[in-house]
Length: 404
Image (cartoon, rainbow, N blue to C red; front, side, top):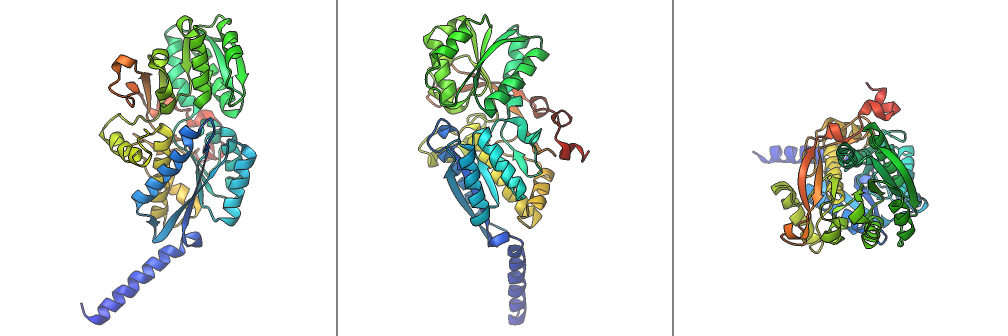
């Protein structure tokens, strides 16, 4: 190649790179990660979610279409007004293109409303309410890891069918808990069971004595804990202290790996639950988890950490495939491309923003089954995504149904 040819080739490469960068707004892709950095959900999606996003960016090479990928993070303290204020600042002054993280469904609801107004994508990796793909759906929502429907179908349905007909709920008193109780009630009744009572406890309750005593006197076969994080741990410990776990079945409808790890196997061993990812499932999950643990001081990842990585990686691949960070074009690519990685098996992003993928029905191991402190679950069943999640035509998401 002579000198002139080399110059022309170099010029062409520069022109191509510049054209690609020109399709990236502000010359960069900026990801906002919101989480609970010190509250009841800190272990579920605090620093771990920020680190998972950073892993995805690092694995992607730190750039997309020749433009740098930046990360910004904040503590939403599980407060919707604070989450909304942070999101507005990120959109209007920080040029954030996409938001990931956020645990409390009430916070995510505030964020998604604002993001939709500005036509920006929200990656819902940590929140459980299925409203984001049904009554509050948006063309800019992508709900990734799990939702209350999948958890109820995976855990409640088999128990009712096995003869546990009478249920009592101890429910977290906010959007997530209400949604989980409502969905689980539908599953109970559809399978011939009944709900004999319920109590609602504020988020962050430390004394569950009165709630558990009401459940104990209800005559139920099963006490369903429609809460999560430390609330679930504290309510189960209280049930054990009162001897309720010896008298009635306890169903944890939202139990994360860290919660199960924190519980005494003598109390929680044998409990069945549903999750979207387990770090020790196979070589793929162990390889990614080993790298995560090295960055997190040995802490094992939950399904939310893995889902946060997966959703971020899929978003970046979609930006690259679309040739732009314009939200509608990126979302179209996200829904066009299959989601097959260490986290998602048989996954795809549906028209309503629900990422449908296989779920796992697991059992918490008893002490004598565990080889070490990270050996938490025994996988008993793989639930196909089509059986775990609410069908598209049952959700009532108008914009998605109009596309059929």
